[in-house]
Length: 190
Length: 152
Image 1: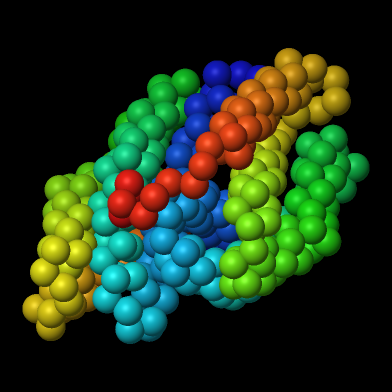
Image 2: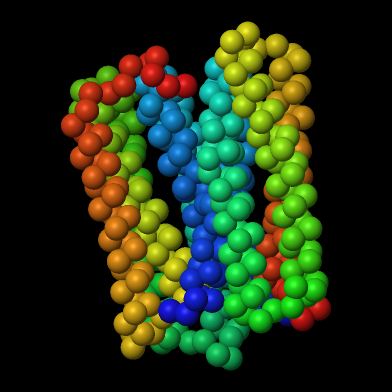
């Protein structure tokens, strides 16, 4: 086994932990929201913060560092390759979105929920919508890393963008439906 | 984009959903146990029963189908060690996880909700979680074999 194979295994494993874990959080968020139980929502929020700080943030940083080391170690790939430029730009977008908005907003929404503010529900819906968009961006990075498109390869780039646009539209539609409906009662789901 | 790249993207995406989701579910399980609140463990058990059948099982099926398409499309030999090891590992994990662990987890979660916590149910959940952890180790070993492709 070569050093680059070991790095690639580590890179893929960290991406699995980070992106797959992010998707699982969304499924559990859906179940917790459907329960309509404020206590369950509150404990779920605490759990997500714990997992994000100790699993997702280190996982994303290790995926990034191992990806950089893979390029440094490679004779074939360079930081000027189109798919690497796209990947780095998407990674920077999701990293900054999490650092500057999603993280602080989650803390603000948690505080509003604890205070029983009527603003908490709509803000939580918006946060979930934006975090799902962020997750879609992560899957777009997976697409970029797998297909490795160049800027000349219009069909690959358009397929990726079209897929992301469809998912974003579905998420926005779900968000609009969610905000237009009253919250479910505690008896509707478990 | 070639068909091979499309199968590879779907194969990796399904593996991410399945394995990454299972790892995170384990962390939620640890946190639920640590909370000492039986209602959290019961809710988690029911949620795991749901995502197991409606998220993990479809992902596992996509993984093996797209894996087969990759072998055919990429002109790999079905006798390659990484293909054989992958199929054996996949079969083992799918049989134990979906034939036993996920079903039992859903049933135990439902019993906890109906009957309340008991040492017997807590021990049952502990057993199932332990089996699920072993399966995750097997899945990560499969990822290793897929990446390194020993013998090629």
